[in-house]
Length: 399
Image 1: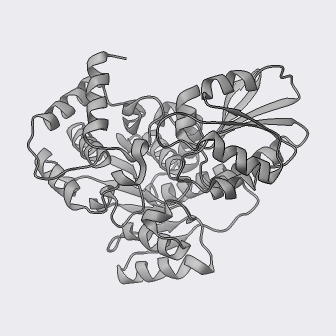
Image 2: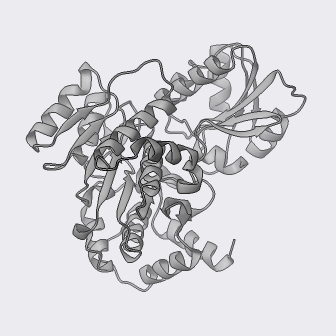
Image 3: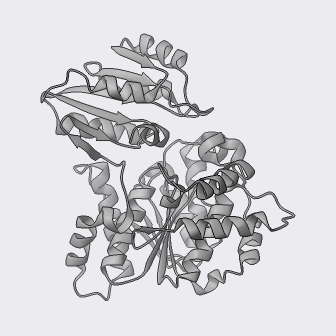
């Protein structure tokens, strides 16, 4: 990695704290900073087209499948997602190609030479950079993943062609609220006047929130039909395809577009770390699932797909997650390797030990995730499946 580029990105992280690194203190619950940054960069967002995706889980996957299909339809498609795993530039792509190091250097240099009366967050700065880049490159449409929430998320300055809300579960409760109704209200904040919205999953507790928000804004409201027989990944795919049916309703070859979108998903979007087979010998599956609902679905998928295999699981978690509730989901017959991943957001070994002992599960503990990843692969055979999950930070350390 170019040292000048790395130094600039490090400055961006350090100057404007990132939730990815420091947690809740980086969250800026206002749209004013973003509006001022966009004005500073002279980006006419009213001339741009967007798809806006919020929700607790599956946002990145849903965004990527939508972007891949739009790419296969012949459009120039911007894709804004977070967090990144290895390289900052993963957040900003056009038809799968990451923004260049030179472009990132130029934007950060502009920020460094500017005098702001505001103190923008890392996310606000990155989002403004992405908007400027997508406008500069004349994207036909931009698919946008919210950061946190929806109503006051920095991305909520746009007027999209379509809004999508994947699902609602308890996550980031200190910021978004401690009930699913409160969180749904925040996510419903992306619903705009006269703009259609699709809800991926709903139930009696939260359905009324979406109905009221859509009625207030005269927004056509669609609910993805319930289907409990498909995996989480397949639900994300169905939701993305529903969005494509609305966005590309005039296209005659939608079935072909959808198939190509899935076949070329990584090429068109760079999506990885979602039910991904990282290695076949030994068989290693990695997933960025990190909250209760996401992990429950990942564990269910593994148990259903590999019912006769021995499972070794490498797990690490950010310290703002409900680790006690998550570990209670762990199948007792699996073998567990708990690890820290460094930084001030990692759950510590002492916490893992107390919870694992309470739940009477077979465990080993590592302060170094790379060493844990090496050891978990020792003495495996074709009867063993290794799964790695719990945090983007953990994947960042080992892949």
